[in-house]
Length: 173
Image (cartoon, rainbow, N blue to C red):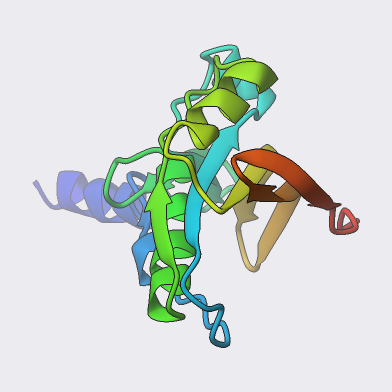
């Protein structure tokens, strides 16, 4: 009996710590200055290859490694897609700064034209689109985050785009 107990304790110490871990992105806070009161459509589209192909769920964040470095998937605590979590943070930050922001759900399968049409449907003054091409954390002793994203902001006049800007941060190495 004591041998079973010792084996159980050893196995839980080696493997139990990494299984089923989740991250709560809803805790993130975006702090902006006063942005006025424009109507803003906000969308985040997840185009990570593993999500688009269906080999990973939309709530996949990366992996956490246990005792011998064996990886276990990490997902969002809410079980909502990562894109929805990020969109919620953006919308809350914009609303806290005075904007009339609303989140528009964008499926990974939508084409660029469908994404634009979805964001324009609410007849916003501005449109903010964050496209995730890569987002994966890897935690063992420390955490590495690999990401590739692009943000596009469009300003509309009479619901026709008059100005557009694309922001693409440098990819970390």
